Amino acid sequence: MALSHDAPAPYAPASALLNLLEKNRSTGLPEPVTKENLVRLGVPESLAPRTLQSLCILDLVDEGGAHTNTLKSLRLSPEPEYKGKMAEWLNAAYSELFPFVDPSKGDEVSVRDAFRPYGPKSMADRMVKLFIDLYAEAGVWPENAQRTRSVKPKRRSPRAPIAENDKKNISPSSAQAPKTGVSADQISKEKALEYRLVDLMSEATDDDDVMGAIITIITFLKTRKPTRFIEHQVSDQ
Image (cartoon, rainbow, N blue to C red; front, side, top):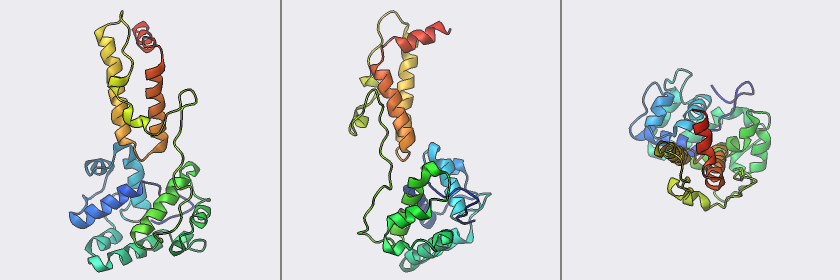
């Protein structure tokens, strides 16, 4: 499979794909490659589906997760030839774009325009970033090429804007403590929710939309009346 107007374009985080390519060369990847195997290899669970999809679209695995000849060739390539093999693979995988874009020129605007016909539209920035980062790793995209809008701005809650550094300060222990009059069991349920949200933040570092939603929820929990959430739970029981 290669890039096609009839299917979504690849938009997995480049870091995930590059880590998998490194593992492919050092120890090999399991076969078949599945979402479960990707999680075991360090891909966050929330990113495993799009990562597997991208591996398939870029002709590294087939629809059943079996290794393609391309993946095998990249693994066996001698180090001096590896980047050249990467460029050959990318040129074949993205061949449909080549009437409109030349990655060696480092023109992000032309890359962005070339991806306009592809879906999902909401992932256009990630498609462009993946393309650029992969070609940069292959030594084709110029190191000094200017980046523009490859990454979308972080979402902010209209009621409680969050500074960039605030993410580091959000933790369950910093949330307001519930008032008296509720059971310890209900308090533990709320704390469990906060801990789970913080855990999810570590899994969503490459997904701006998910990260923004989690931060919004945590901010709401910290700024609401402390007993409202718990009292609602009690009334439902």
